[in-house]
Image (tube, rainbow, N blue to C red; front, side, top):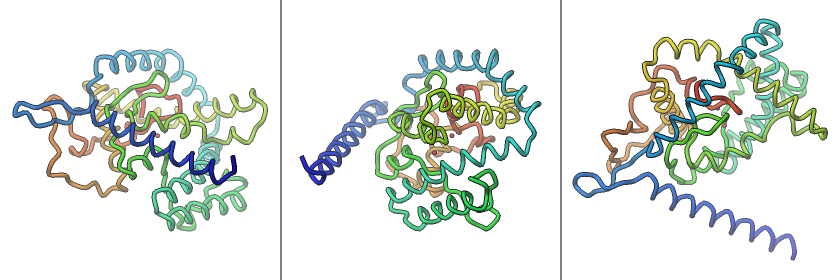
Length: 280
């Protein structure tokens, strides 16, 4: 089998996978309304999702939050920012790839320029020189690419350790989460160490947001769900969410184009982060 044939087979497989995903999400998120017309449901698995959320929240309170708090108190803030920049530099390369897949070549080239600039002049990405030069970060991921290709988000789902997601983003999750500086290491122990440092560093950065969430949210599960869905929808369309006259929602569900939640940070899933906290 030559390379061209293998490439065609890969494209065919990808097309079939996306078609199957679109069919699955369409069936799972609609239900007949009072007038018989289809109604969009965003959280049909709420009972299960709340159980997973409670597990993640308990784990976060007992283990992750104390570790992140100690890390924040011990590691100087400039060092923590530098670690975030290094992980962000690798994410920019993945963002460039997804921008090209979405047809946004200019944004992809800008992401490549960011990576090149920060790698050369920012000591491997420890300093974010590109932002100071006016090269903005785009933060595109495979889940957003699927959305731009027309794959519906599907039901909201909460995963153990990984937190909030959708059915569509769940298919992209393993790939998106695998993109990190850990790919540069061959030793398994070194890779786990890098992933662990990145996770703790990100959780430490979210301590303020989760503290605010504890103070303002009567039902944290609902708040996080609505914020996550709204933000992901906004990211897919680069902030220009189209209005659909045909969209209809169950009265018990919150539409994805509802007024934005107070804290957008609560909607971004962290790598292996608990659902109690605030992603590409």
